[in-house]
Image (cartoon, rainbow, N blue to C red; front, side, top):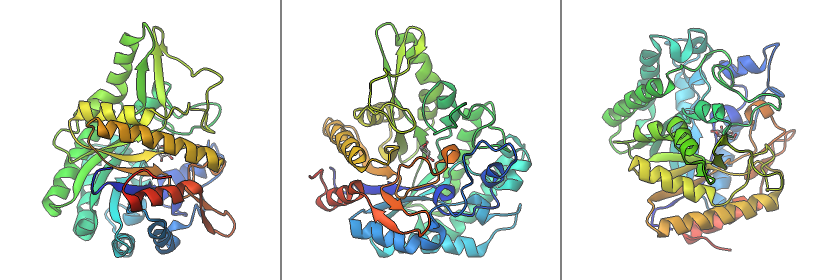
Length: 397
Ligand code: BGC
């Protein structure tokens, strides 16, 4: 892999920290009509155990960690910022740097402060000013600690789910669509692209003014979209809805974060279900090892900026399957890099067994197992293999 390639894994604050009580998601989990299999509760208690977790990542050999900041903790009431929480995230970043681990920081991974959600969320006229105030405070406090910044996580996810794709593990009976889903209290704006593009631009400008050296981009759900014979028009329509407009917004960014889990095949009548016999994630999506390389190739071509793989993984409790799929996907990715696609790193999803949104703890993508009663951490074979690759700077056995 190229010099300086990032090797590691990612988490999102709400999915691992635990007790994110001031967020809209926590409220939704505890609502009487909750669609969550269980509440997030203590999650992996990463909020308190981050130091050990980062030490373990370093021991494994990883050289990068993508983690999220939780807006609902940083600004639990409108305009009231917690210095203690901002200091906490500085300590998380320092723990990474003490171990030579590059920080990839997500400013918002879907969850919102409850007060923001209750005041119309992203639909409010004041939403952009509220977001700017938050980003400004973060950059002032943490500016120099962030090496790479992902402004928003998968703002295109609703478009992907609407089209029948698999970007989020939803409840069995109905996928999270439209205004529902993760943001149970705050509907997603119907004109999502322009709202989130504006939020992204504003964040990028604030970061640029406050910390010239951080590399800035956003992360997108990028499935490997393909046409079966006769499916070309449906493919073009699918790409237009889920990917193209979003990738076009990356012009002027330092990178685009690609998050890939599967492929989507279009026939003349639209998106097809995968054939019954294919190998699948525990959440039903097809496991197709070339999908990551193909998604990176398309994202790099369309956006014109370098790619960082900010998520890729397997929903499974089968360690062998996780290792096999990760190795096969990365060897395809190495081929794409050799062919000239500019990919700067690979961050697996996810560093720890995590709260998988609606599916709770019945599903996991983790590379490091977390015992739900003792919180003990146990690296899986994939975590060790990734560390060996990081040390070698190349795919190894
Ligand atoms: C999200 C993660 C989620 C993963 C698997 C991605 O779209 O960013 O938060 O856990 O998919 O569903």
